[in-house]
Length: 471
Image 1 (cartoon, rainbow, N blue to C red):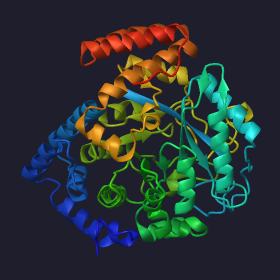
Image 2: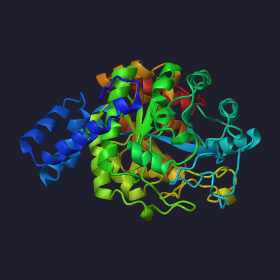
Image 3: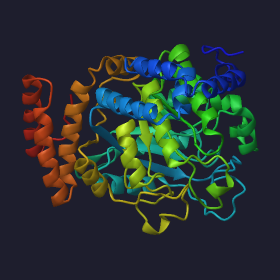
């Protein structure tokens, strides 16, 4: 039976509730008074229930879909302005004991070379990332108790934070590793991680078991209840997501919304981020073999409704998606994107490792400088900010500030300062000149003269050689 506050996966992600929700959404997908009322409710930025969100996703009336998209754009601007946070994944190891059918790291794949980075190799990877200008990483590793135990992950985090090269340093390490114990989550918190991220892949238990036939990840409840254990371990910034294309998108969308509701109701803090990856080609993995691929138009619809339903959450899109798709979803709700990503182990420091150990093929292969320049040409502020975590604005405190709309008085100045750092230390001349003009324009848009003066003062300090200034 459905219980949003239950600690049991099968109760807060209840199959019967999802199916009833899908039937309700199908029945009401052209119920104009209901849909217009839901759009009005969403415009208050208080969120929508999973059932209400499902109706908006099923809506196929062109004029109403257009209203949903326009509302998503408005909500995105209200909460996140025109900032886009930049990050890069860092793959530590592709050893894995799981049997996931959609991932080339699965234990039975004998064609992919196995690689685990030493601490010295991690150092080289981090320096390569720092030399691009990155400040925020998402740590990735396969699940393997011998090759990638928690001690290895903790040592790697310590190594990453210790590296200062020229003006570069990684200021926030987010972690995307397998579901683990409360004790291990506590260790990750003590190591100073930012957000703990774990994708569900699919919320359909039957499909989940079929896709995960062997290994610890085959335990649906253990995996689905991971965020509850992470919260018990003291982590208050948590990110969720599904891999669209493994199962019917409608089912997984509702499950995703139910998981967000559960986190808010039972854990006291909703998801810090929601990711929306789609399955991509990889070694031995052909997306055409999965019958539930999500077309671009519906993918845009999914992003827009998530933004309407969970207005406060950050939304992430990676280089799995093309430049064209990424450009469209920036308006609809995405607030974080990766740039110059490598999904292989050792792919940043060694060019020949770019693809041989890759978890999936990259669709956007541009350099970080090209991505930064592109964002600014579109009118966005590329942000390398990590201030909230280091200032203690996490979990409930962050959500309270974010929901009030006051977060922009911190985030916009910090975005401008970190962009300035990037321009001074890493940008091409063309990107630097474009950025200087953008910063001048954006400073004038800040909410009051005192704030504008403070930002101008810090920008001058950066010009004089200071670094890591933040509000």
